Length: 216
Image (cartoon, rainbow, N blue to C red; front, side, top):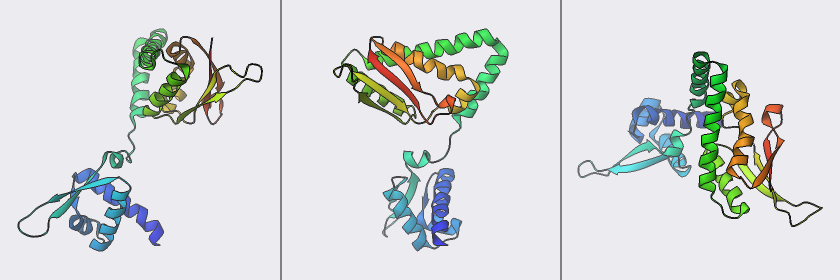
């Protein structure tokens, strides 16, 4: 019984802190109707996980009171549905401006993104640029990684496979697959001295998107 109860109690604590901003262990115990000892145990675990932080507030001559608040990681535990808003916004835009204009808007978006990537990747060795691209994609919510693949014909040839195991814009890609298609062109512009080919595609039912990157 305890195992099923614990995660939901921790979730209740996180939700309470999200709504109230901050709370003491005593306040949490009273509002969630659990013992102060149990609350303190949960708070200790949540703090160890980096989901909450505390500050000591001195009230009079007695022991300081500890107030708990959510950390950034704690806030990130709550789903934020930007993608639903984005799809809805794109739908409204498509209705307003028409199909051709919509294509032009989406093209401008990927061209701007590609130029931003190219500027941030710079002109260093290919390995450094590919690693930096992986970092940028991870910061955008993609589970991305890259590895070197050697060719049997020319072992010295530098070729990389960039793999993304999730799609950070999956809801948008479902409604507007062209957004996903532009990704290939975007990487090619970001790495102008390279040939970029798609090897796997989530949209085609595969469990990952993959790109082969090699010097031209």
